[in-house]
Figure 1 (cartoon, one colour):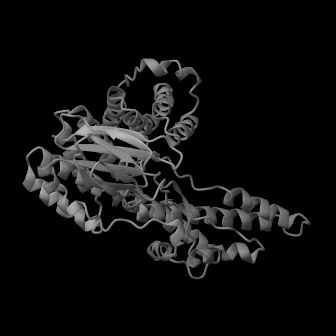
Figure 2 (cartoon, rainbow, N blue to C red; figure 1 turned 60 degrees about the vertical axis):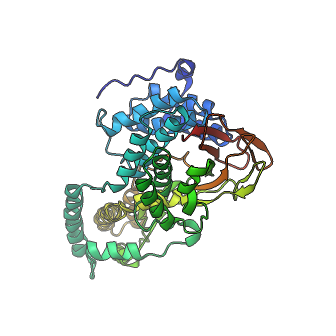
Length: 446
């Protein structure tokens, strides 16, 4: 593994007291949610310096890159995302506990592209193209690992049949039943129709249109329209470049959290029959990692100029983008969880029956049996639930004609100045929570 060079003078003093990655991440989110983007990124960068876990370096790079981006610190943004890129290019070993997701690749390149716009970087188009291309990547979960889990399941299946399970379901039957378990709509996220990030595609279209590639711009924008048909700006966003416009992007709220979701099918409960026969009520905990809904900070933004007033409109649900990506792992995660839980039930059954028989006639028979089963059944399936949790819940956009005074008034609360040299400009506004200090990035398209 190559040595990570991550020397940021302003944060080195924090390194000695940064503590664990988890603590630093909690500190990051508290500062970020309040709109203290530089302080948030400093805390995460300090923890990243000291951490030896490549996955923490990777996730820390995503977090601090996002923080420095909204603090308008392009140099430090680049350092953080360079650490991310070193993981993606295979320069660091990736621990198997955390699987790098495609949405992380897409959003990290998208944010590097946004930083490029703000700095008028010549490689901006390349960054957006890379972000777009990541949408085409397929997830290849380890087939060898899944096959090994199926073999272990078959052995545990035999043990349970020998212990008295009369109608042992197959792995495929259990997977199908788990997938059919209903989920509360209030605590679930609807995935995209296919794996795409309309935000990245919209930015790429806009940048292509501004830099002369109108054909590609129009084709990309038509794709975006499929995902946000009610956004009235999209249909004429490319034409707006000919007249001189300001495009407004509102990164609204916080993405949902990845948590354990319990999905216990009735067929799995059949497997505890032998334990029930000796008086043990064994609880089953079959879980998979899933995305729970995030929150919006505001319904929308009001944008006023000397000529007009508009409200931002929905463009993309980042929750849905993340959910679509996670769902690619869903079946394999279900197989892993079933294999773990069935293995646990089989072990508990063997231990429980043995303890029950060994203590037969003893007044402590039930206590011994319960103790033997509890020791096994109390073990929980470990899931790595770390995620990039500073990205927004959703993206909204708007467009206004370039104002004569080069000023936007947002929510009658704060103003944004547009550079005099810009024919077309883009303004990014980040508000993680209703009480956040807004993060603002102003870039020139042409």
